[in-house]
Image (tube, rainbow, N blue to C red; front, side):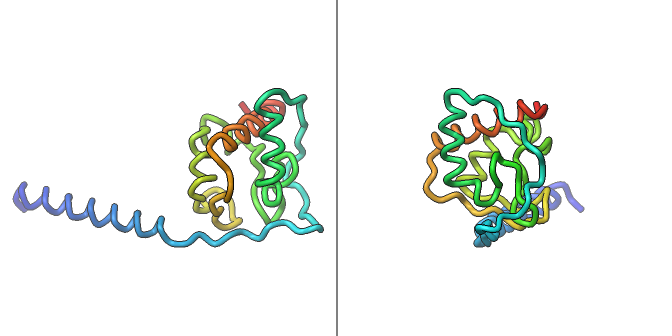
Length: 145
């Protein structure tokens, strides 16, 4: 195989792979089943700190937009959605940018078996930053940092 042919083959594979990734990420993401009045049990015990500043605002937004799936105090709900107060979501593994992208674009299931997370309707980047402040305060209080 000539070097020129090898470069062309690599370029075609890269373009094809990139196209597949784009196509795969544009498919609709099914929504998980939201909790109902008989909420599923929380997956972890969460100690709640005294909140200040952005974390107080984030708690309000979290309760309105996220708690139906991720549970009260981000403790998760068995069979519904994972806890965000978990070492998987520590800043070194899922930085703040991952939370922003998940809220904006949704995320494919990759750590848990709950299905894909759809985008969160009606939250701004500022809202998500406040939610992150709340989740990080919970994580810190629970030894995840």
